[in-house]
Image (cartoon, rainbow, N blue to C red):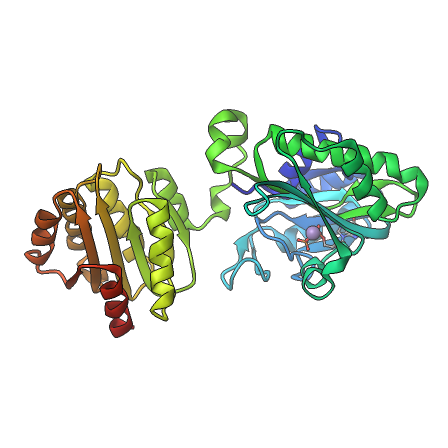
Length: 385
Ligand code: GDP
Ligand code: MN
């Protein structure tokens, strides 16, 4: 789950990370009030679940409460399109009004779960700011990666190694070491999948501040943190992902045109590989989950049929706890309920009650092509696309 910058800063501040003074506003009048409280020169920052706001005009430097109010008026109620949002952009419903800091240097500090390292990796760079992706691809040697042992946690020498790599003036080493320490504590305690401070600013008056903050929470650990569930902003999420999540279906929107319905996450990944191998692109990842019933399978198909980019639906069900006949009834139920959204389906069904499931589908009158294995599925997709 993603949270907004202002929420990320509140969370990180409670672990001792220094952040600029500021307040969040959802109307121009509130922005003026926040600006009056903070005083001085200010930044007005669009709150959307995406980076790249600076380059997209979502961050405005202003010098009075009047201007802050005006900047908020121009941002609120519009959609911000950044390279991370896609062409439809993300709605701006809040702005963060903060003291403008004078940047002497912009550093990068992040932590992320790294599957191949089997744990958290801290990432730091002297070359922080809006072009960190460019730095990572063209000058990777400017980026330090420090894997953290999950049993030992962040070690003192690792924090110092990170701080020294940033070429700080001597007086800032200790504050940065304690900041790195606080960041790891927050990461662990909140069950994050990613935290990122970019830029971590060294101000002209010698302070270190998290000028931007990103916190992603691990969805599978949210049950441990009831208080964090309130930070969710569904308005920033893909509506299909919200619908799927409410139905207990794992769904991630992707860019292709083959809608996938699968039971089991591993099988779903393998299915996407098959789509790729056939020279096509999946329109989504979808795992209906082990204990799925007819209604859940129907929900899954209706979500996929509501996606205009889907041209063919690929169903790959391995019947176990979810029996094939139950899955087939769910598919028919959804397809019949949305006749205008019908698309050809390629269906592979194996396991418990597969025969019954296949019979239900072939007698349904729907455009269904039954295949026996994934190679045949790939062939069928190739022909259809
Ligand atoms: P992002 O573009 O979505 O990553 O948003 P950021 O919060 O990182 O802001 C983008 C850039 O705007 C930063 O790298 C800074 O250069 C600049 N910026 C943001 N806040 C301030 C500020 O308070 N003072 C100054 N001088 N620049 C800022
Ligand atoms: Mn940033």
